[in-house]
Image (tube, rainbow, N blue to C red; front, side, top):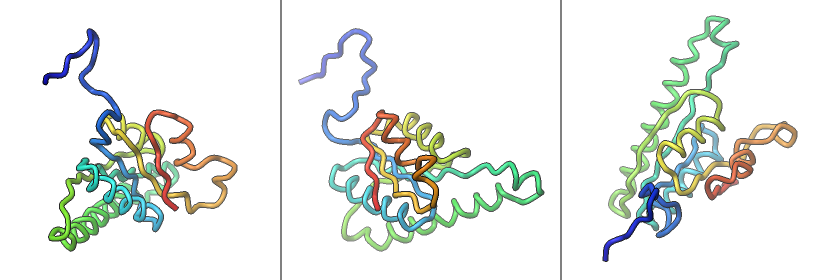
Length: 156
């Protein structure tokens, strides 16, 4: 049976047979690492691609002071990739999971939105904010939920 497309149909449809791409935001915090683990379980069960996204912050104040911010965030990204490869290697005989690691520069919210759009995400998984003050300004997770563009799972 072939799928028939209506005129103007892009060929991409969210959520028809379960997620095909699950984006998980990671920043090295405990809650973000739990979010990646949770997303990995979802991806494994759904046979979806797990796209792990690290958004490298651009800190204007640090750059103005001469701090090597880009080098620091590049090192964090490399460390996260190394940790994920090690974890994947440890469980490869138990279950197989397809995953990719992506980095973006900017603020976490816009970086995750860009990633989810570019990767055609069916779902986004993030950790609950561990920073104080987010009750007043709004956490990345709350902003993603309010955007209403993807199902968002917030992992404590």
